[in-house]
Image 1 (cartoon, rainbow, N blue to C red):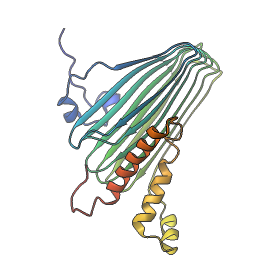
Image 2: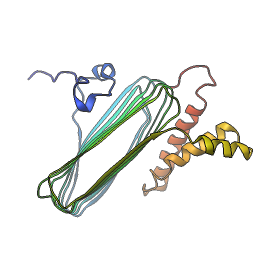
Image 3: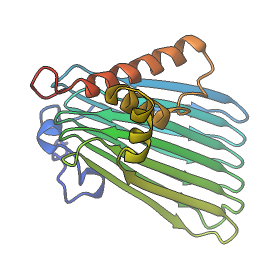
Image 4: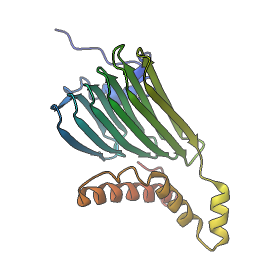
Length: 260
């Protein structure tokens, strides 16, 4: 069997990706399979902090049986290309939650691609994504929710917000709903903006240095994404990595060059 061809931007899931970087590691390894049994609960973490200039691609195929609960926390900050994909299928009364953040600078390309299929009734899903992008970084979220014809009482939501630190940074967001049932609650919200200049002015008028004020606002923007991590040590590890990346972005002009 011949190898699959390298993707192109004509394919929706790869529209905003770094195809040259993808080609350097093609073909990709088999996706990681996660199965949550009937009535079981599972929590998974991914801190994607690959080295500068490297390519990190993580694919997950997740099946959650009836009454199961799968929560995934993700911090995507490393590499020239950092791409994480999820293909999720939910059984009757099952739940999937994704709480993720992307923080990038330099010429990084960071991506979160999701496809959540509500295959049975009474399923719920929640996706909360926050992005902070500086310099020429590109951050993309493409999220698809499919509700089968008989999957009544589905409750699904997507909340996507991105903060641009520079006008040269790019945030792409494409939440998508495909619904065949008629008794469902499905919603998505998307917002892309910049730091609140009035808030920065107010903080400066109270004697706070501009860099400290910016850092405080950015921390507040991603606050709460990792609150659901049960283990205190893991939560601190994620928060520390996020703050370190934010600090690197805040100091990106000090050395006179681009960040990772």
